[in-house]
Image (cartoon, rainbow, N blue to C red; front, side, top):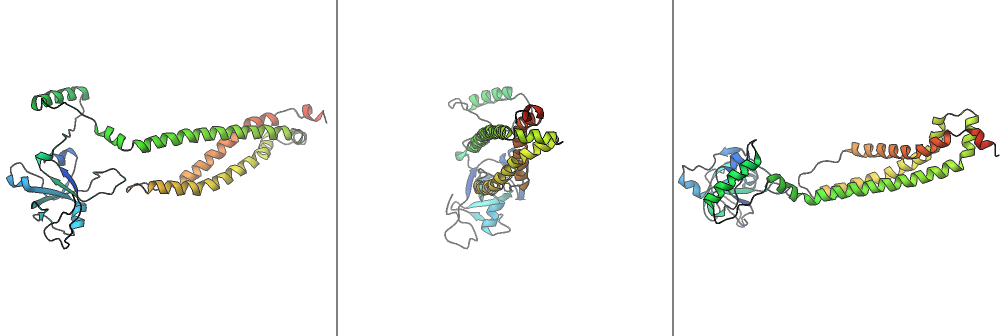
Length: 283
């Protein structure tokens, strides 16, 4: 609702408020908290023309004691203040919100089920619904399914990123394995001589794999700032977001080096275990 004014407002333009119509049970159902004033009451007929507002609305109104003030063109009376809660997806900040008790705007029934058989509970609710509203079909959905659909794009993007990251790692490992095979073939004489001179398998493996490790480290140095930049841009689309932990980049670097060493060590270890006599005797 836009252009809403209130008693004591210093501007003529009014302000925008999120709008929600609900009965007194919304406080208990959503585990909200009354921080000032009271909830709607069935015993008070005047509550048909009353509203609840949230803490963000109090800040917008710049009024530390809004209780009893007239609100909007209909002259609603503010009877209580509830704590802020996310009424919109996390891409939006918590908005100034008004909750009115107008049954004409009730479109949904929000039910909280206890730890019972859900199917039995739904069947019982359906029976009551058909008794009360026989002309309207009984349709329902769970709140967690609504949350799932709200962030479905992010979930799908996460799955796609995992798939393409896995394919990228697999292709990179194939390339590393091919390079390791080529290098081992080129260095087989050197490996044989080093073995004769007393080199151990571990020293030979490190000698041949360190150049691969160097390139993996360089790739990480290039990838880290790019990943940080694009992740920061993506997170800016959310009003409430997590921070990027530098430990993630260190962990990614360690994992990439480990994967690279494991990939090439198979071929290099085979070359290091070759009997040097089988290689040098042809020279």
